Amino acid sequence: MQGGKRSGMGVMFYKKNRIYEGQWLADVRHGKGYERYANENKYEGEFLRGKAHGMGVYLWANGEVYDGEWKNGAKDGYGIWKGIFGDSYIGKWKNSKADGYGVH
View 1 (spheres, rainbow, N blue to C red):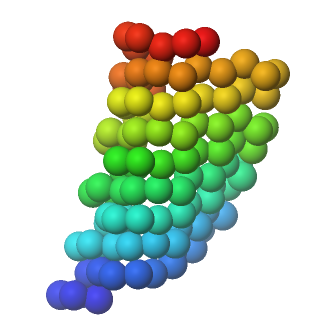
View 2 (cartoon, helix red, strand yellow):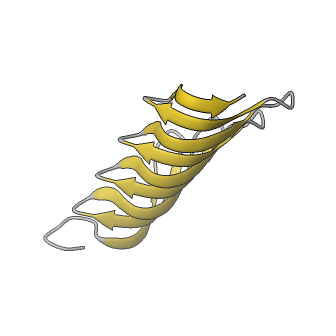
């Protein structure tokens, strides 16, 4: 804690069965971390001011995976998405949607 705010490494257990383990700065998730949501989806990667930002992997409970760049909590930049039926998309993303050049 610094000035009454979480800073450094820590674990947070939320009331709705969500867990975050990783770095904190000024009371928000910031740096590298791992988060498991109540629906069993998982994110592991970088955070900035409480949101996925930088490189990270998101794994849905149904088996879908996105591995790539994030910006303000959305897929943004270069990334690879793999679906549950053998389909995939490799390329650019913007606001969590395939955008620009890519291969499906």
